[in-house]
Image (tube, rainbow, N blue to C red; front, side, top):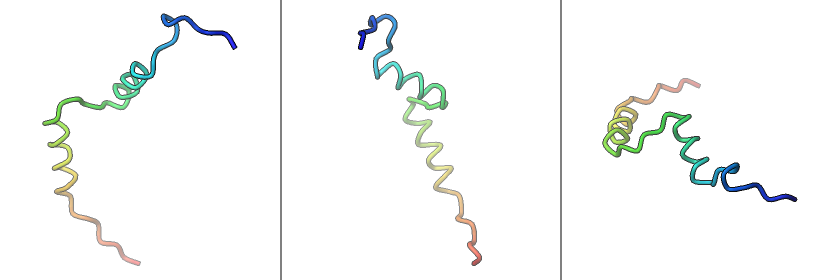
Length: 49
């Protein structure tokens, strides 16, 4: 197996950052809390079996 140069191969942290951006993640703690509150405020749907 050949080794790729560090310029050609992204490290795990860079791949993680790219994936987070792709999924529209936000580093802002306040933005996270606001979104969490929206989810927590939702009433569960009535499950009819």
